[in-house]
Image (cartoon, rainbow, N blue to C red; front, side, top):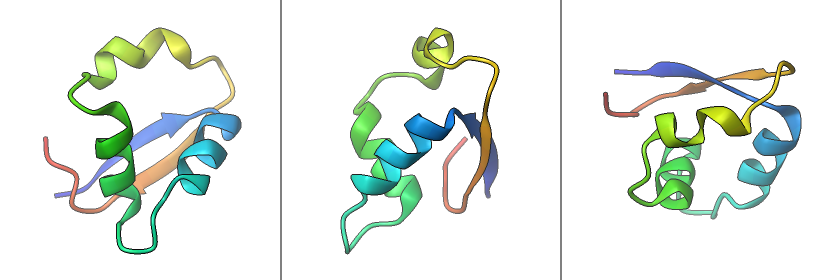
Length: 59
């Protein structure tokens, strides 16, 4: 199953820059948030967002 999430451009670029050669973007996000809920991060994001499709993301 895949889901869409919204990230500010700088958040997307930082995540993309931290993606390892052997992992998907979804793996990167999972590694970077390491046990934190995306709801814990909801106040971090402002009004300017990028839509990112994360294939393989679990619900």
